[in-house]
Length: 543
Image 1 (cartoon, rainbow, N blue to C red):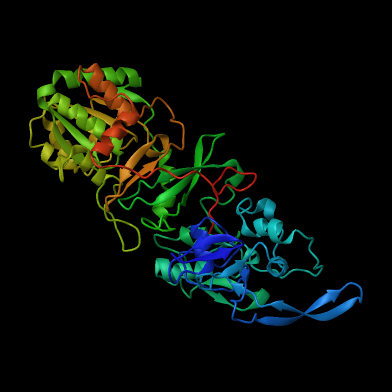
Image 2 (cartoon, rainbow, N blue to C red):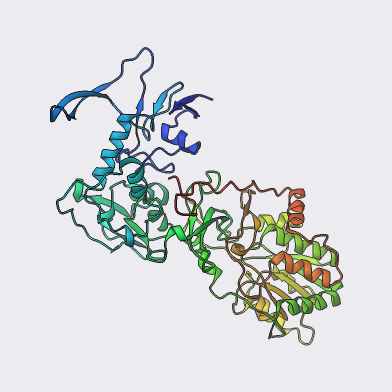
């Protein structure tokens, strides 16, 4: 593979890659504002300028410049090499590039940074980007001098509502055009445009439009400063108080990689952010995925129930075990396309030990698209089937035609029609005993016929693995401590089986993961949580 030298370090690259993209893939950040690895090159911020040494048979391109001579107290003519934007310059084999080691680059970046801050409001104390703002970062690393301009800065509109989720502050905008490009190139809907030039520049919504659709939050996500904010995160907290945990979106079968940002003082998630994975979601997520943290709290099932009466999880597990052991010969176990591989493997083991029939359930299809949203609204349908070692399983619609006397349901999210629930209720006095491992309170579906309800953790409260629609296994880590009287799904199943006199062969999460590997489900190990900025434990995006 060809390489070039960046500040003395060998950087491999593929044909056609630019200097900044090759460095980014090696975890090296060349200062930038307008460049983004998932967008076209604009090269308008000039922050990524680098010095490229001429080849042996070439002459350096030099520019005449005026520099201040302290002795003469006047400007004099000098020369400097022409700097090149690293975002636009293609890497070449044997090329020698200076970024952090060039005095000319350092001066250029300092001047660019000062220029961008001429009219920028100093409202960092109330800006949501504070703590992860490129202007703050590069002020410290590239400028670190006091503001020299004493004139009144240019004032522009503040707090403009661009749509249901996006608010725009024109005074903070640095004209990088990332938001405009993400609309045109990723969302494929030109909802944003620009007007005027220089210090009069503003981003505007296209005539008669607002920022809407399934990917509006990506408009805010690509903003390197505080010009665009989301109404969901706006004025809610400070990033240096948040802890980011690597996770996988539970919203659909795409399995977008993401960070879950949690305030550990309150054990509360405040936002999700895309986590870079070019093979799955590249750098993007849909709005539903970005907001999936909200469902961790809303309508949660935090207490068990037995025969409609509130109970403890321990007693509910005992009651469930009694029903399972009493109906071993006529048991149905319903796997879940919503739950992790580990939980489904535990459920399959219980079913085999009890000689039970297997079914599968999950959420109904939703509106997918060609960008990221898969029409299957379940993150682990492929993983549940692999856990069972089959290519398909009957749905719960077929379950009502069998005369099962007991049903164990993993997860309450179901594509169950109301008539299915009605049929199960109608089997009086021989209605089946239904044990539901539930995360949320909801009317109808399985909870409408549940004899025993055991509250279990949601994806953000446990470690696990999802297998997406492409068959890619992806691990996720626990971001939140469980609330209420809940247990992890796999633990509930193992305890129910043990109390029923059944041996699943599992007692630890590590054992379930070994079983997953034996079924060909092996997730790549999660990378170390690097990219943490000073003063915060929140992983920073390098883009």
